[in-house]
Image 1 (cartoon, rainbow, N blue to C red):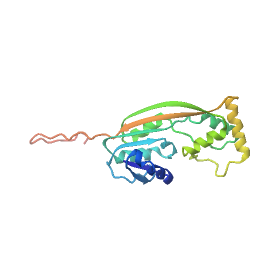
Image 2 (cartoon, rainbow, N blue to C red; image 1 turned 45 degrees about the horizontal axis):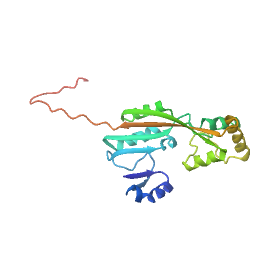
Image 3 (cartoon, rainbow, N blue to C red; image 1 turned 120 degrees about the vertical axis):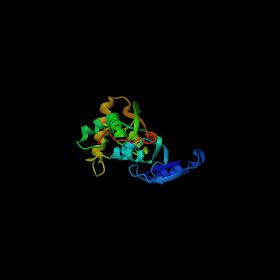
Image 4 (cartoon, rainbow, N blue to C red; image 1 turned 135 degrees about the vertical axis):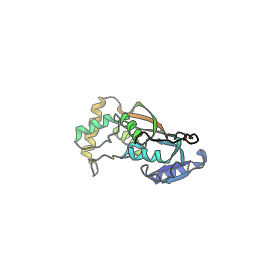
Length: 212
């Protein structure tokens, strides 16, 4: 078992859980450049990681490379309706990008096929959580490692004026009720294809490809 993460802090936390979860190796690396041998992994399990990657094709390509024939990739990520309330609130404050734009389930399925993975299965489920204050929502996002990976994101700190405008915008969406935050969770899986067995020719048989 290998625990792989880009954040060293997450790997240190994983090391403290080895007693209850069994022994495993820890590797600090990017999902788009896995330091693993070709065809060396039976199962790739990714939980809420893919949405922070700029190029899902590269990630799926690496998963295809390291999986053994018949191996399984299974993952969850966020879809485009995630944090739609927060996106609307920031749109009322300024025109810059403050909330990640997440990839549609069907586009992820197409990327799985492009990578050479087989029999992709996709599904989606929506959850709406409620918060008493905007800062409670921001704290939750920070705790799951959220960051804004979009081009066009603001490079400086968010000032009090913008934060207050966002607070007011979210409250406008909530209309006096607890503050909503929608998470569109995308589930996906695909298999590494198994090469068909080579057919043994008959004695004296000559095979001529029909493509030439």
